[in-house]
Structure formats: C-alpha cells, structure tokens
Amino acid sequence: MGQPVERNTGEAAQQPPLPPGQRLQRGWPVTHYGPVPRFRPERWDFRVFGATADGDKHCWSHEEFTALPYSTVVADLHCVTKFSMLGAEWGGIPARTVLESAPPAPGVTHVMVWAEYGFSSNMRLSDFVSEGALFATHKDGELLTAEHGFPLRLIVPHLYAWKGPKWVRGVEYMTADRRGFWEERGYHNVGDPWKEQRYSYQEEPGEGPEL
Image (cartoon, rainbow, N blue to C red):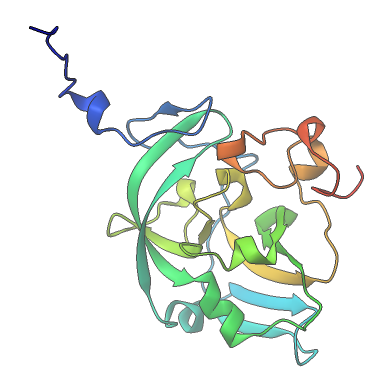
C-alpha cells in the first residue's frame, strides 16, 4: 500500500493566493498621510480636466456625481505596507463611466488622480479603465467612513492601494506620464503587487519618468 495522502482542509487550503510579501489582514486598518479632511457637500465637486476630447473641464456636484450609475465589484486590496484584505465588496461609480462621460483626447496615455490637500497618484490609462476600477462610495454595503476615504476613494484592485487615493476630487488626463505624490517620494511608478513593485529603485527602463 502507498503512503496516505495528507489533505489540508483548513482555512489555508481555502485562502486565495496572496501577492509576494503580503499577509492576510483581518479587518481594515486605517492608513493615510496627513489629517482627515472635513466633507462639505455644498463645496464638494468632482472635476475631469487636462487633455479632454472637447478641450473643456467637466465638473459634477456631489449630488450629480453620486447619481451616476452605481455598480459593485468584489475585489481585494493590497497595501504596500504588506497587508492584504481579500474579497471586499466595493460599491460606487466605475472609472469607465467617468471616462465615457468625459472622454479623453486621442493622445492620452496616463491619468493623474487628484485628492484633497493636493495629494495625487498617477497611472496608465489602461489601469484606470481596467475591470474593477471604481470610485468607491461604499464597502460591504455601508458608506465609507471619513477615515477610509468618504465621500470617495478610488479602488484599482490589481495595483497597490496607494494608487487609489482617498478623498478623491478629480482626474487629469495626460499625454505623457508624470509622477504623483508617493511616486515622487520613492514609490514605484507602476505599483503591481504581483510583481512586488514597491519602490522606484526596482523600476525597469520605461516604467516611469526620471526622478
């Protein structure tokens, strides 16, 4: 007779694979730089500007933006600080909806996502419109808390979480890449967790503009 086969029927066998260097996180830690902004709905707006197809700036009030078609996506969140939160349900407005409502000019290759206090994060246009990219207003059916980005944060599931800022206020269309807040301070310009692209010194030629 052969040796018995050992089977793992516990939680480890059920857990999806994690990106390299990540650990499974229970709950959702609060991580951000700087103070939590105060939300003033009468002053809040969402802007799309830069290289738009019609050359104009597009603007929505909070009421108008949250009235755009709502969608949900189940997606993971991978923080560069090495925790991963799996299988959260995010609700909000797909990034593709914003792109369709305010189309970019033909030469646009990248976007800069702008948030409160001048915080910014750049990414390729293909990442911005990828499946699952969402301007989230809800998590697991509940409104986001202020500490987690209310009224709006960007979720880009296949990139590290810093690429999806909290407290988002707008999107700039760009015809050339430009580094955002953390990318200027030593973080990888692309930020793919499955390639463990954490820091700028890991960048290959063509993955980012010069520092």
